[in-house]
Length: 356
Image (cartoon, rainbow, N blue to C red; front, top):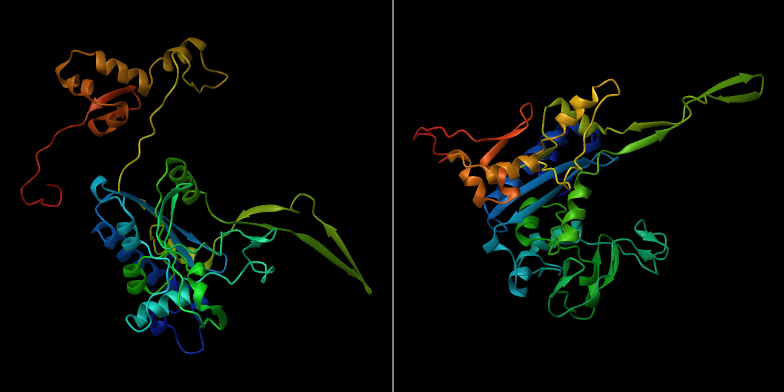
């Protein structure tokens, strides 16, 4: 989801003679409200029952924020047929007569290019090809898993010419340039919302790495200039010549000043250690006693899990029927004692319906 500077809520609050770039505070506030509303829609099942969700907000150098949202659907709501995939994700231009608002949003925000051999200088072009894979192939029906993603239906349209964003496209093949979107989300939020289905483990791993890739950076040069007469002498400071700095846009600065969250998830994450027998990683200082270091590294999450499974204590019997990845749901890891401790069970008042 990408912030739109033409959102009605932004335009109404910006004084005459200014643009969205002049008021990052307004953009930050509206963006946070819009993002929160979309996350609420997702949690309430717009795409299906949500099993887990994470999001990370990023800020482009020109100042427009966008969010990467990964949603894991409940097992029964995962799209497994062409018909369900086509309802969830569309790659075709909507009917202008039946839904003019959605048509306007798609043609304004969800059309890629044009690029290709006829436009070699397009931003997305590299070595003669589009880095985003456009134009996409035309298909009458959606195909299943291809490299971790479905190949969506893109049917041919009637012959003619369609004018989009001041550029002429062949109406017959215009669907080749449509970015995948969800009709409900695009019509409601009137901005760029790219919706994709992911169906393979390697693709899922890549997505999680991508969303947590970190902030933008900028490389700057610091130089001293001296002028003598008509001559200018540049004396570069070798120490400060290149400073690898983090880039914070005005909108991101406002987001942080307003104490707005730039990332979130529905579940707490516990990183479980995995190692071979007696090959666990141990960290120590050069001044530490070797005997203490060996003792400290004796117990890990994994070895303590094995001890739980072998324990005859009544409170540990539940571990015998649980897998290693399920242990954090039943126990918590005591860092100081280096052992698993059963979660405390507390009574919940009837009025706390939110946790029942």
